[in-house]
Length: 85
Image 1 (cartoon, helix red, strand yellow):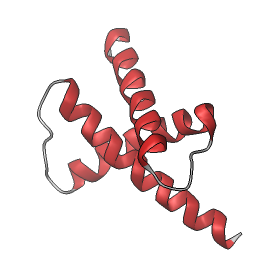
Image 2 (cartoon, rainbow, N blue to C red; image 1 turned 45 degrees about the horizontal axis):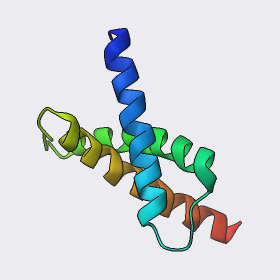
Image 3 (cartoon, rainbow, N blue to C red; image 1 turned 180 degrees about the vertical axis):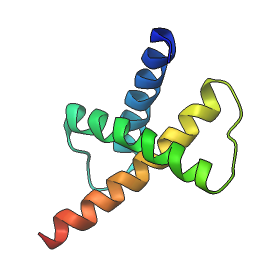
């Protein structure tokens, strides 16, 4: 993986985390927490879309969408786990 590709992937994950924390009801986890969950979510979103055989296409907006969906899934899962702990 090229360095530029890695940096763009990290930026997309951070943006997705910020968006997911902003959109989700009940508050976020602070800027750093939302950004970290966004990075994890971008990986989860990419994995889910690939497993379903869905291609988001190229470009910034489809990539952010996939990462955003993954970040929301990670935020929901994290809230479910925290609620039971």
